[in-house]
Amino acid sequence: MDLKRKSSSLTDVGGTSSEKRPKIQEPSGEEFEPDSFISAIGSNDVKLITRELYLLKKVCEFFMGFKVSNLPLSVDEIYSITKEIISILANMCHLSVLGCVEIRDKNTTLIRLYLYFLSKKEQLPVKTAILRLIGNLCELKETAQIIALNHVLLEKVVNCLKLDDQKAGEQALRILRLLSKRSQLSKSVLRTNGCLYIAKDLVKNKNNKIDVFQTQPEILQTFCNLFKFHPQLVAKQFSEYSDFVQLCLQLLIKYPNGSNNKLESQWIELILRCVRCSQELRSVLGETSINKILELKENKEKLTDIHCRFLCSFLEDSYFRRHMRIEEWDLGNSALNKILERVEPYQEIPGQTNFKLIPNIKIQITIFESLCSLQHDESLEFVIRHPNFIPCVLNHIRCYLDSTSYKCQIEYISPEQKPLFPAIIDQPYNDRQKKDRQFWPLCKDFSAGNF
Image (cartoon, rainbow, N blue to C red):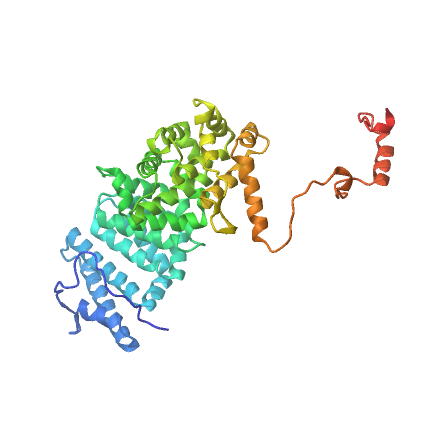
């Protein structure tokens, strides 16, 4: 086993690596120096690692002797020593897989330690060190599973997002991000309402809240990881925080044609996919969001691609289909009419008679997928009567036939030429069914032979 975990840097809570740490004199005469201990843990020399761990054990026993002998140690000094020991354990897990394995074997004792310090309102440095240790444990699959299965511990981690301390919040978010990467562990984040609290952490204490989408790539990565495995649960937790939902709507209104900022464009894509898959989120957005999109000057002549995708998502619900068809809008300016205006026929390419260009093919695919939900609805008649729909459908069929190597031709088949389908019941079975029905007092045979 490779005992050294490759890493470019080592982050220690409560100080930088350049700070000079004092040497601790052991009762046996040997000196324990934290810097040399960290260097030894990062090596592949098992004997050297064992020796340094033995010295660390003696140091811990030495400090425990203070407590047993009732030597005067203040509470702050005890917390300071505890923080340093936890930082050493976190560094061990960061540098060595063996350190993670050893801590996993001592799981029961350490989890009680995690819960004790994360439950206390004070001593933020110790709490931050604990969170960093848990985050380093989540780097390894085996130890990450232990953390994910402890629901009480994860609730304490999520609650740390509410703290005013930035370092503690960053470490708590790191734990949730590492767990969200693994498909089998990601649902544990959602069980603790992780998306809801991350969204609250995103918008809190921000003056210009719309600018939060230009930063915080860790939050975006966490949401995308969770959405990959549990899209409906993520969107549902978004819907429970109305301020975040309205902030997402502001982002869509601000950038009708997309943003040049990479993070903002990824946020827009995530928002559109969440709206598409969640009825709860569409209910929170409501009719007001549809009206705001239609009132934009960018959509007066033709809907933009982003806003067209947004409105297509509301075709999934019968209530919103009625509103998009007639309510508060005349027939020519309704949302459904605006969507169908984006369905355009193909264009002939001059000089290339065998090739036809279908404009905006991606947005047309989205529109036709959304129109599949209009079965048994009055909106279907509205769609069929629209002047763009039937010609566009026929154009798509012709383009498909032209692109295939088979000789296909659209022709009318009379009812006499149609083959029998399996759904048609054969005559012997039908006669047998009639004989059985004579014993049914509440059944009437309406076949033509009885009239």
